[in-house]
Image (cartoon, rainbow, N blue to C red; front, side, top):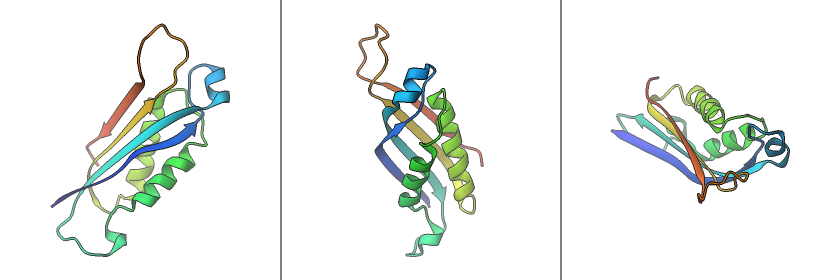
Length: 121
C-alpha cells in the first residue's frame, strides 16, 4: 500500500537569498513537504510511519541555517528527512517552497516557487 504524509504550507522565516539584505532580513516562506512510502500493513505504531510533527521540527531546525538558494534548502531538507525515515520503504520526498515577498525585480508575480523531488532511495 502506498502512503502519503504531508505538511502543507508551514510558514517559516528563513535566512535565504543571493543578496546579503535578503539573508539579514530573512524571508517568510510557505513550505510543503510530501513523503510517500510503501507499507504492507497499517497499524497504530507511530514508529512504523511518518510523524508529521517531526517533519515540522526538522523544517524549523533547518530554517536556522542560511542558504543562497531555495533549491539548496530543499535538497538539505530531503537529505535530513531521508536519513530520519530511512528505515521505511521510501518512494518519494518532495519539497515545495513558496516565497511571497521578493525584492523588486520588475516582475508582476504573486509569488515565486521552487519544487524539488527525490524518487530514488
